[in-house]
Amino acid sequence: MLIAIAALILLSVFLIKRLSLRKPILPTHKQIVFTGNAYLPAISPDGKFIAYVNHENYDEQKVMIQDIVNGQEIEVFSGQEFSYELRWLPDGSELSVCGGKDDDWAIFVVTRLGGTVRRLKYAPYFAWSPDGSQIAKIWMASKEITITNESSGETTSIPLKGSFTFIKGIDWSPANNFLLFLTSDDEERYAIWAISTDGTTQRMVVEDDVPLFSPRWSPRGDAIYYFRRKGLLKDLWKIPVSSDTGNPIKPASLVLSDLQAGDFFTFTSEGTKMLYTREIRSSNLWLATIEGSGKDQKVKTKQLTRSTLWNKYPSISPDGKKVAVYWNRRPSRGLWVFPIEDSSQAFLLKENAYPVGWSADGKWIYAAEEISGTLKIFKISIKGNQTKIILTIPFTLEQGWPKYEYVSMIPDGKKFVFPVYKYHSDVWMVENFDQEMR
Image (cartoon, rainbow, N blue to C red; front, side, top):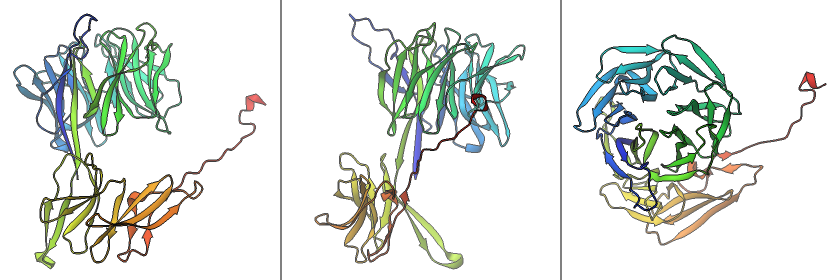
């Protein structure tokens, strides 16, 4: 079971200008919301209010606004499913959010105190101009940005260059006429681009084969911030850019590391505070037992482990009294055994190996691992004092790549079934592909 607990965290003073003769001001983290189901965080430009979506009930989510000083909280909008974007308008008087149900989606704009809701044409990602008079929108599979004047309704389109498949984020510089947008391609490479609002200048700012999230302009428009995934965590990175051209002027540098963060963050207008969701993800073991039969049959459930780490690929012993599992507990990641009737546990093997099954007498656990294309299946005694290799199968690139996480076996340990992933790539040539080149 996956438990995702989100708590809104306020990060203060990490962007305050530091003079060389002064001690650096260290960042401080403060939890603001304690619901465990908050996402899409947005801090008001003046830093006095926060907004977020409460998704305790997925079909009836709520947009909440909280006063940071006194903690008072109000619901300003509900009854929709909300996703992708939640943004304050630049003057802080209104809040905008992407939401809808079924095929009826829109961008909704509501005042800070709730009340009348304005409805704008839908787009999954959007950003407001510095004066709030225009809104830029993108669609994930599109190759353009549309900019609409909210007073006149006039819309212009900016064609986008580059080889990419999806657009996943946008931001409008608060200091100049530049936009940011985030893309990904079929090879899962990510890029952040800067483009002028008239479309005359477009430049790639950063490219990475690790997922990137939430590109944001600095308040002065002279730097770009973004999240970069690191395993289950995220790092915050910064790239100084020219506010006139959008060109990077220095290499990217790490600002904050190892954040248990969600995908989104926002700044105050002066850049001293940042809001994000802190997400704690874990996987624990549960036992389901069928009791009785027929009309009297019942299912009894029991949680076996309680941690903020990951338990994967459980295998229950023949007598039903123990469970073998891969557990990423530091510093002893590897194969563990949990008795079902108590909370004790035994560490067997510090390997990147996953349990496959048990011997019929319950004295041995079979496990599988893959090293450089070679599948190895071995058995280890439940006391952890003996290990025996059962089979080793090397695979060539032509044959494919064994997926050791999904090995299945019969009880006598004589037959094993496992999937093999295969990638095929050849070189082709086409002649006369462009008639104008003949």
